[in-house]
Structures are given as C-alpha cells and as structure tokens.
Amino acid sequence: MDKVTRLASEKGVVIFSKSSCCLCYAVNILFQELGVHPMVYEIDQDPEGKEMEKALMRMGCNAPVPAVFISGQLVGSTNEVMSLHLSGNLIPLLKPYQPFS
Amino acid sequence: MSSPSSQLATLRRMSIYEPFHQISMWGDTFHGDASPNTGSSTIVQVDTRLDNQTEYLSHNSVEPSRSDQEANKPSEKTQRRLAQNREAARKSRLRKKAYVQQLESSRLKLAQLEQELDRARRQGIYTGSTSDGSHFGLSGNINPGITAFEMEYSHWVEEQNRQIYELRNALQKHITDIELRILVENGLNHYNNLFRMKADAAKADVLSLISGMWRTSTERFFQWIGGFRPSELLNILMPQLEPLTEQQLIDVCNLRQSSQQAEDALQQGIDKLQQSLVQIITEEQLSSGIYQSQMVAAAEKLEALESFVNQADHLRQQTMQQMYRVLTTRQAARALLALGEYFHRLRALSSLWAAQHLESA
Image 1 (cartoon, chains in turn blue, red):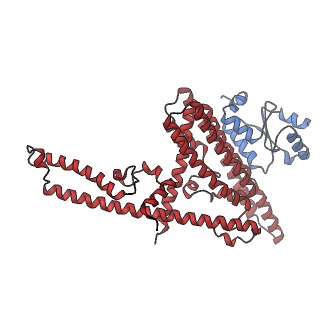
Image 2 (cartoon, one colour):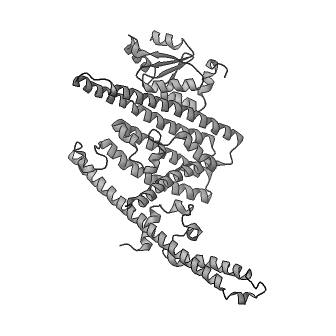
Image 3 (cartoon, each protein chain N blue to C red):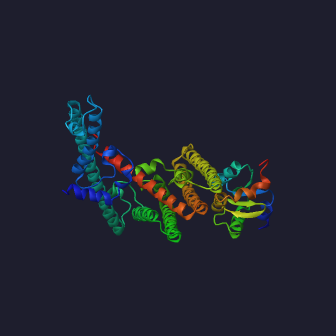
C-alpha cells in the first residue's frame, strides 16, 4: 500500500501503532531509551486504518501493530525488535538516527 | 510409620536434602551426612573432634611437660567441657530429627494433596463441569487449559531435575565436548518447551498464569511478568562462569544492558496497561448499561496482558540463546547447571518455609 510505504520512509525510525496498544508504547519507550525519537503513526486514528492494517500484515507483520520500519525497511514487530536488540544488532541500524551517539 | 532410614532415603530421592549440603544449618557436625544411623555416626564425628580438643587442652594445661600417656587422664575442666559438648551434640541431633520429621510429613502431605487435586481435576474434566469451582478449593474457577498446564509443568520440573543431575555427573566425569553439547542443547530445548507451554496457558487464561500459583512461593517472590527476570539471570550466572575472556566479558555486559533496557520498556508498557485499566474501571457510570460495557471494555484491555507475558518469555529465551552463543560448550553446561540448581534451591527453600510455618500456633 502506497500510503504505508510513503509514511514508512518519512523518517528514519517509524512505528505504526494504535493509540490503545500498550505494547506499541513499550517499543517506543525502548527506542527512546536508545536515544532515538521514532515517528509514531496511530493507524486507528486514520480513516484508512483498516486498509493499512491489512497492508502491514501482507508485508509480513503477524501482529499489525507495532510495525517498525528503520530506514524505510520493515524490521518487524516486537519480537523482531527485541531479538535484534539482545543480539546487539539493533543499535547499528539506529546509528544514523542517534544524535551524538 | 516408615523407619527413619526409609524416610531419609525418600528425602534423598526427592532431592530436598542434596542442595543443602552446602548450607550448614547444623554446623560442620552434619556436613554431607545422610546415613541412616545418623545418631551413631554423628557421635563418632563429634568425639573425634573432642579427642583432638582433649589432646590440645591437656598439652596446654598446667603441666606442659607431662607425657602423652598421662595426658589421657582428662582434667576436671576438660571433663566438664566434654559433657557440655555431648549435651550440645545431643540437642542438635534432636533438633535435626524433629526438623527431618516435620519436613518429611509436610512432603507426604503435599504429595497426598497433589494426588487428590489431580484426581478431582481429571474427574472434573470428564464430567465437563468447570463452572462449579467449589470442588477444587484452591484456585476457584479452573480453566482446563490451566489445569493441563499445571500438570505438564510438574512433569517439566521432574524432567528438569533429571537433566540437572545428568549434567552435574557429566561435568564431573569430563565427557567430550560433543557429548556435552548435546546435553546443553537438550537443556535449552527443555526451556523452550516451557515457554511454548506458557504461551498456550497465556492464551487460555493469562491472569492465572501471571498469578504464578503454579510455582512455589519463593519463586513468586522473585517473579517478573510471569517468570524470572532475564538480567537477574545473568547476575546469577556470572560468578559461575569465570574465567571469561575479555571479549566474553564485553559481550555479557552488553547483553545485560540490552536486556535491562528491554525489561524497562516492557515494564513501562505494563504500567501503562494498568493505568488504562484503572481509568476504564473508575469511569463515572451514569446507568447500569454503561457499567456492563465498561466491564467488557476492561476485560478486553486485560487481554493485552497475554502479549506482554509472551514478550517477557521471549526475552528470557533470547537471553539464554545469546548466552549460549557467547559461551564455550563447557561454560554453557556450567551455566545451565547453575541455573537449574538455583531454581531447585528456591523451590527447596519454599518447602522449608512451609515446614516451618505450617504448624505455627
């Protein structure tokens, strides 16, 4: 879906979220702890939200939210972000977006 | 009434005793000793020490020039000393006997209760009656998924104890790295099985799972979102793994930092979940109709807890995987052993606590 792809490239780190989703909040907190300020897009507040949900799932996210994009590429949901972080492979991806790291 | 020897044999099989050989509640007098004739062998041990003491005392008494033969006649002071020691040893033996009996009877009581519970639950499942939770007493409404989980978990613990025993033997026997690797991977897989079981249980009834009632009381004390805290795991393991190379130290430190950051994030997510739940429940209701939909909304919110428990387990799993990657096979085996031993002792501590507090007035 164009809209999703477009939004995903708008900023270095983009999280598609829902305003009621506390797990999305947790993922956002993790990025903040790492010195990054992701763009959070609440798809439940978008009239095309349902479409975006379907598009995200088609792209490979098992849970539609949170869906994390870094440098326009889909990284995955909470599982993938956590695995990356524990294996030490998340921070290298975030390097360009960490001010004064 | 079973004899003391079979009681102790049972205790050993139940492995309550073994981890405590390091913890000397009874002082060195009972170190590593679990023979049926505890009384007599203890006397022997104590007297050996006293004999040494006697020699020592005699040599330092008023007549240091006396020969060894004359020193065999103990002085009054020494006799009094000996009597006091005998008395202390006797009291200690009595205390130990009482403790062992208490422990053994609690253990039997527990086994009986577990059997009854199993039977009742199985009957409950056959008759399909889960709505009337009164039979089951202990945890009110029983979800068959949770019941199944609790039974599977007790088998899991038994298998875990067997694996720990095997691992300890293997490390002492210096088997090849290849064989050790198999044991380590079995151990890791065993934990993966637990996480799979927990995922099913979370889907059935996450509140029951997160209550931790399926675990012992001491484990509950340390609980973080339905299980152990990953960064705490690293703290437990670190002293057991030395010496580590510099690179390993760096890797482990990084892993600890990453897991702490991930834990913080999850914890804040759960805090937010709690706040939202409170908001929903305490919203001003204007009529009973709105109250019902409020409750339904609250229950929906609670469902989100399932994904948090899954994420916490995922963190546990990933922490273990990363440690496996960083360590040598032998170190990984020692780590698994240390981890298993730690939880075994926590459970044993819970039994001890129960024994001490079961018959309080």
